[in-house]
Length: 383
Length: 128
Image 1 (cartoon, chains in turn red, cyan):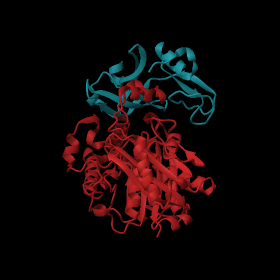
Image 2 (cartoon, helix red, strand yellow; image 1 turned 60 degrees about the horizontal axis):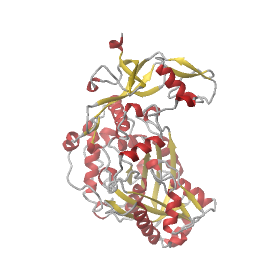
Image 3 (cartoon, chains in turn green, brown; image 1 turned 90 degrees about the horizontal axis):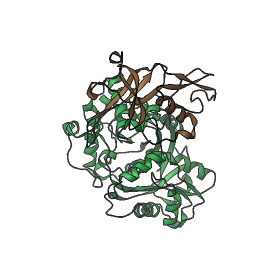
Image 4 (cartoon, one colour; image 1 turned 180 degrees about the horizontal axis):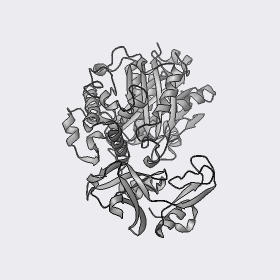
């Protein structure tokens, strides 16, 4: 079951929640050091580096400098929050082409402790101009996701209560995770009555703004078995994107997760019912609903009822976002790498009180931009 | 956003036409489809044989959201499907944000905002 020929070795997290004044480079180095050490490697063994940043165009070069490594393969392509999962595809190509042996995939940001200012927000708008959207002042990203949610509610009768169920379930998982940022109880009414951002989404339908770093090491499947006692095999990876701006998305109720998921499932030779634990990017409560449908876990339009009645909460029949997700655990701008780390934790049986019993297979799905870029990977315990 | 009209190009053409009171969209002479936002090549067939046509200005609300800023009044952001096919982001005016409904027929209107022309839409029955 190693169709794609690569495995994930060690993982590392650092600076979750509030990094206490430490810089992005500092916590990315801490997470990376943990991931590399847990892989049975030294930093000097890392000859492939993939990382990206929403602010620095020199990011991968800067991080190599900070870590003191000279990789023979580097990549820093921006896929938003679907980076780090889409990067598995790049890592596999680089390893199979013989360009490198051990790829470190890492990310960090500190938007909570080093808050952005209006000058930086203005600069981002200037660097990625959207002449046909910015004049209408969409409060992005929430407004773009709100437009998708409103259309889903219109077409399929999805309700705000069903959206809220996603946040409530995520909080239930976060309460079992000592690393999670928000661990106080949350009810559907709390979500419905929270401050409205862009209808129908309130501030509690939206992901956190926290600090955090995540890293993991990818190697060819065979040497991985000599390095790590529990390698996690990457059985399939798919990546697809359909638009940059929400006004260019062909159908707001169907994302290109339908394509990325099909590629990943086909390569893995598995189907949705074969998956034990699912980690889906929850930037907003609407996103897991869309991805459950697009990835084939339920029919189009049925995501709202699927997430209801505790099915995706702890104790439910469908373990989803077992760390508490971007909604309640951690969300430093781009969340993709954290999805991988949590899936690997579950597949190794290291989830503590949030552990899903007998988790052998996992699906991770990253989302970038405004439902723009979608990356799916299917992982399995390699032992 | 500040725009340098002297630079030319499709964006400049679009906004210059808008400033002259005309809502124009590109149409492909090969596949005959109209697209939006305006591009240098047709996003449907790849042709560069594009012409500007006057849009009918008629459309239907595809999705809508009321934005609640921390300060100031709530306002509408909407996606409208033009009768020619393309979708665009806009704002529905002449009705309160909470009264904007998906599926409602709307008509374009060019207003001025901060000295720049801006394409908005109004309910079709209110636009006669």
